Image (cartoon, rainbow, N blue to C red; front, side, top):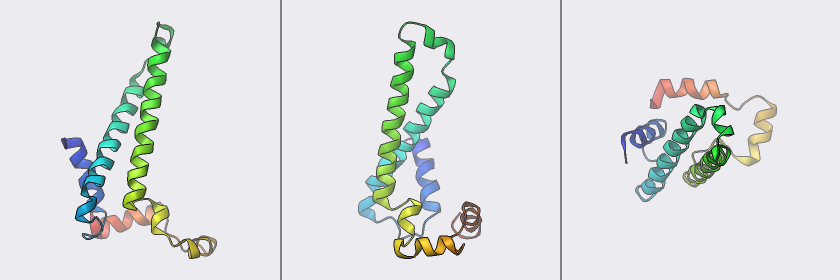
Length: 121
């Protein structure tokens, strides 16, 4: 993995208990990191795309291709995240999620970020 992918790997594992990613899942995590960096790089290219280029021959086709490539990378990244159970949905018991949300018991994003600062980061 390159440095950007390694940085994503470290960001992920620092937020998880040590035993969360099993050894046999390490390649799936590596793929998640590759897709995350690819999606981010494509987003940077899209952000830098000058709207004037759309008027040039092939400009719109290039822009559409970048958008499709980012969508493919994002879906692949999400598939890896789901397989690794990294998504928020995979961490909530579906039987109690609705009740907990109604009662205001589920932590907010900001609560989860504060927990990272206190323990795993």
